Image (cartoon, rainbow, N blue to C red; front, side, top):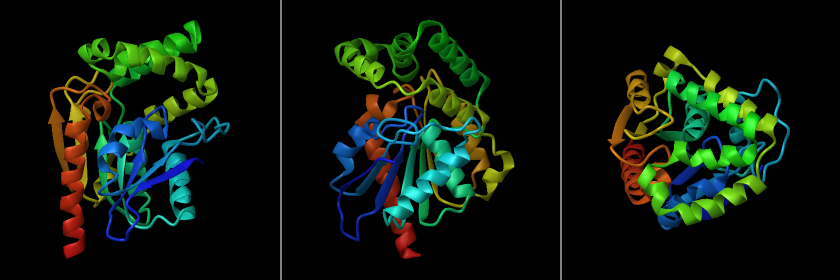
Length: 265
């Protein structure tokens, strides 16, 4: 699996491990890397079966398998204590790591994650799968921005989006891998087991998220014993891109608080 380690390398620097959403690619976190590398050690990776981590995923692929893969990757690269920052599917991986009592996991920061997929989210993915099957990767990629970004942000960034779309089509993952990853995230439903998670957790949600209703984060907060919720009016599903400054500040403040608490204890 492809891994990148950036930023500070001294022992005093907290380590942030970023886990991407459905796309799985490390480059999703470029806005966070640019802003946070001076203060943190940053670990990015391409999830198995995506980007620079090619593999044929099994039919029964699961979030638990993704968590196992990340645990092995971190261990192989001598990553000790860390804070997991996950977006959507990547947030589910973080929850699963906590359920597995993964060594070194000190906190969770989960953006637009959930305890169980909303019927709205399931409908969105049904449409996306039908679009992929009927019209192919180019149409799937073009529609993807509608689920990720607010309308005005799309209009203001259309030239760059068109460039990115061409890159995404050229590097489109194997269809079976994509469908198995979608099935894995829709199947994730740990229920009351989440009440066992003790790590400090920051939940970030956006009221204009067109893919995952913000109340999914609200419901998740009710299950997690040590969770706080930050809800923003604007940003869409990918607010780490559309409102990077706000998200970066929110993440930095949270990590500073939990690191201080952990060090004091």
